[in-house]
Length: 142
Image (cartoon, rainbow, N blue to C red):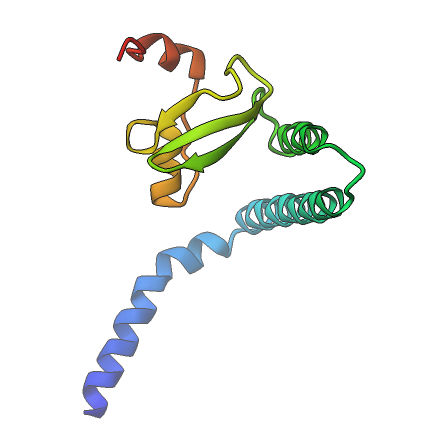
């Protein structure tokens, strides 16, 4: 039994060797630390925004539309994106409640037939690339 544990431990160590060797380079460590710092700063901005959203939702004197505008504009700033939207789930569809782009409020898209729906079902972001190029290839006549 002790031999099997030792063999497994050695196999684990040898599987880490390329990673450890790569990380031993000072430039690689600095790159990893920079990425981690950027990730922490992004998460900090997101948490601050969530707190501000909570405060705005609790303040009854502000109209909900003003809160939607605030949320989308702040998310666009944090994520450095051109367009942002708020969608609410309505059965098998998502309805646009607010958008800073070309989408009309009230427009509905099926969850199973949209990129947004794919993000929801996978519970992750999807990097699309150049949206204008993709949008021109999508058949919207259906």
